[in-house]
Length: 160
Image (cartoon, rainbow, N blue to C red):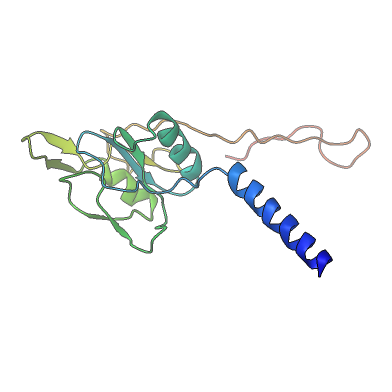
């Protein structure tokens, strides 16, 4: 009995310490932000880092918000800002880029963007709108190494 009690107390203490040291998960904003917020949506490649950057810059979720690629609550529809139309959560690259051209008129009569940026894991293509900029972010830094005694080639040439 005494051993069981000691084991139980140890388990509770360990769980308490773990809970205190764990940072909260960053997900969709808890409420619809104001129409003046900078809002972003897109694919899940850089979802976590953009959520963390937005939350670190603005923990109140009123100036910069970043919406997850996949719904944490099961709802595929989202309203990026107060007054903006509900949109389907973007699940593809082309959908993301096209969202940057959608606007709405807020309660003050000002035209606002539904989203200011989208996360995408591809670059500009012939189908990309001319008025959309692509900025490289979180690019891969892939490299390789080979043993001095190997059948591997001494150099690699990128394929076209």
